[in-house]
Length: 112
Image 1 (tube, rainbow, N blue to C red):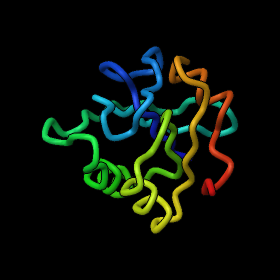
Image 2: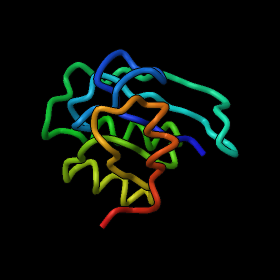
Image 3: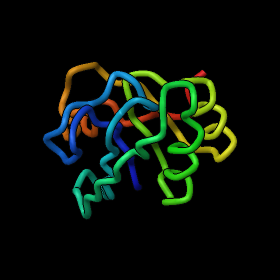
Image 4: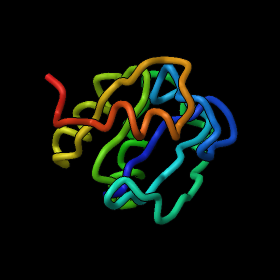
């Protein structure tokens, strides 16, 4: 499973989960199988992406083949993109590290 986690900083497993999907400066993409991390990739959020225009980074993550996305909150554009692509998304506890969010709050399905 490939999970994208919106980060507050430069990305990586030690980054902190961003409170807002579209405004996050980076996304950490983690390939996980049987609770084992297979690969980690850091993707920078486009500089011209501002809150309210979250469909661009959402579409980019869909194109990268993610199965689930974790962030503190999602805007309606991102929710529409992920729901249309049948990508699970969820909001874990805020102020946790990316690695902790992966183990504590794996998205369980499309959130309603």
